[in-house]
Length: 236
Image (tube, rainbow, N blue to C red; front, side, top):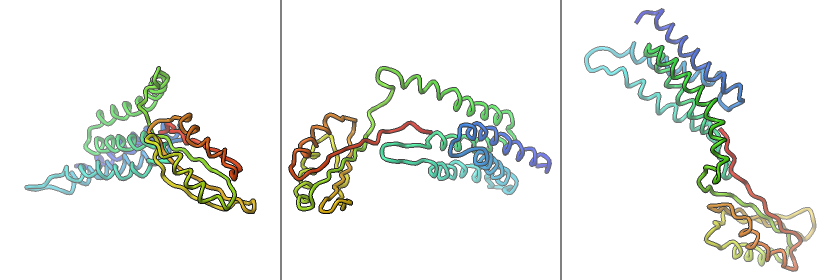
C-alpha cells in the first residue's frame, strides 16, 4: 500500500466522519463533530493497520476490522442514559456505530461506498426524525405501552410514621403497581416526618394511583399527600 494512498484513506475517513458529526453538533447531540470524526478516523486506522501489518500464509487482515464492531458497541453504551422511564442517546449510539462503518470503508479504499454511507446516515438523521414525529401523532401515538415511574410523598406526625408506612404498602399492593422503595426522613417542621414511596406501573393510570392513595389523605395525623409522575421522553 503506497504511503500517499494511506494518507488519502485517512483523510477520507476523517472528513466523512466530520460530515456526520457536523449534523450532530448542529443539533446539539451528545456526540458531535469531534467524536464522530475520531470514531471514523479510528476505524480507518484499524483497517489500514490490519491490511498493512498482517501478511503471509494464514494471515487474516479482517480480524482487526472485525473487532471495530464490538469496540464501538462499548463506546455507544456510554452515551445511552436512563433516567426513570426515560431513555436517551439511542440514536446517538447508532450514529456512532454507523460512523465506524464509514471509517472502515474508507480504510479499505472503498471511497464511493463510504461517501454513499455518509449521505445515507445524514439523510436518516435529518429526514426520518420528522417522519417519526408524524407517526407519533397517530391515533395510538405509534407506541407500545411503556412503564411509568410514580413518586408520592406523605407528611404526617412523627408518632404515626409506622402506621402510615403500613398503609402505603397496603395501598399500592395492586397487580398494576410494583413498589420499589419507601423512605422516611425528618422535615423542617418539628414532630413531622416525610414518607416518600417510589413505584412503577406497566402503563400510566393516574386515576388508579389516585384511588389507591386517596385514603391516606383522610388519616387524622396526615398533613399533606402529593404524587408526581416521571413520564418517558423521546430523546436521541
